Length: 224
Image 1 (cartoon, rainbow, N blue to C red):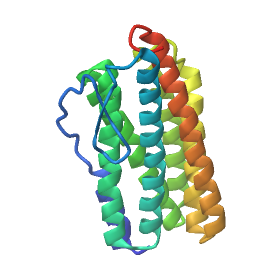
Image 2 (tube, rainbow, N blue to C red):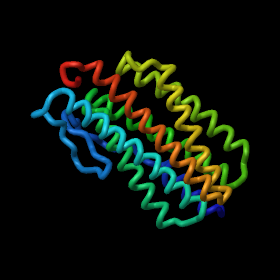
Image 3 (cartoon, rainbow, N blue to C red):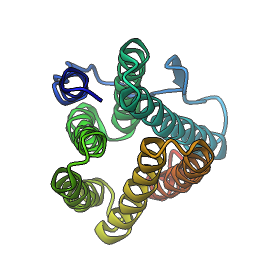
Image 4 (cartoon, rainbow, N blue to C red):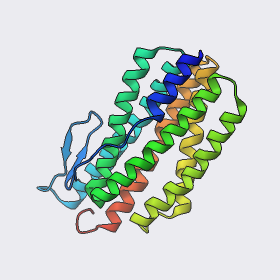
């Protein structure tokens, strides 16, 4: 990747500005970005299922889009990269709206800023990988592991059933599996890259289940 491509990568994801978000009291976003209203006509069990499937789709999409963006960046495909970046940020806003649908607009906005920060760190790792700067790679990994602790504290503050340690461990695994994807992409090992992406995608389903289960237990009047 040349200097211009690396600068484009850093600016495109690293310079994303926070957006003004409206409260989303009873609406989640499905993986295609369209509103998915919780089924008030059904029982709590159906609402819990909607919550879990919605989070599962959104978090899985996050990994797929991140991998698309890093692959395009590492290969200097600017048009493909720009499209992936734009869609990735839409996905970030949808995940934040899902959190806001449970915890309110302030939590939604705080979550979005925190979530975007880890994408910026992934950018730093990708740039370091493309330019063979081990110090930059190591710093990005260190920052991502620190982010796991911050994210754990954030979710624990919203839901005591989600311990900081458990969430941090889940996020750490997310970081490691996504790093494996980027490393394989940089090595031009497509087989390994897709295997790593499958693992990363599967792990997001585990995170979605943990989040949905904890939320359902926190609000038993809404969810079974």
